[in-house]
Image (cartoon, rainbow, N blue to C red; front, side, top):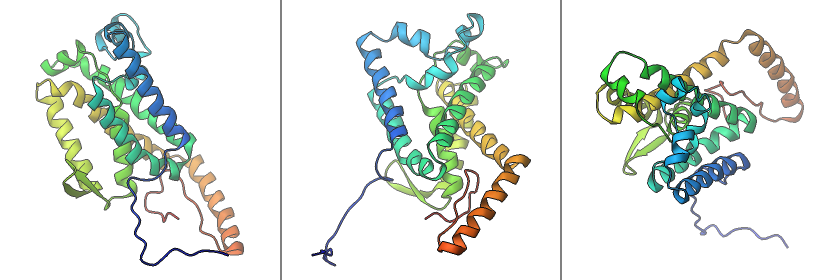
Length: 250
């Protein structure tokens, strides 16, 4: 006999839902390298895998703009980034699909690393600090996910400092302005925030270019036409694409 839940039953949920396979792989890779870094003392591994603009340029360590994303400076740094990856990335992966999500994650993370290296070559004092520093952490890609999340869910509240609810679109504006200020302020915070700002910029350009691709637009319109025919026949909702920011989600 089928049982129905009691109308008085109260259930609670936290976060965007279960962790997907791609999310598990990214988190596992970050945790594994964090443990390895702690066990080996961190200096050798960080010098090779962390993003050091001076070494990346003079010693041609061209892998560093990709590998720096998997290293973290401490437990809280790791926990914060992985929590943000889960909170913002899960729904985006659900909308985009795993392939596009991973492409976006690595393009924004690596792009933020490359922009950090280019920023370090500018003739400013803060740029010289970045040039001689070691940049680590997934924050560049995380900021890219945050921007995409705000484009899809602009009015959804994000709790700043876990207390103040702010609509996602304004939260991104605040974080972007803060990253811009700190990146040019000449303080030590400019080192990491230059990468944060790079993640926001690369994410915006990536999503913008997807909307301006004529061939992609033609393919998208054709697929939408095919899906709409199926929808009329079977009474289902049509899907969307990664840059279709204002569509309904079901």
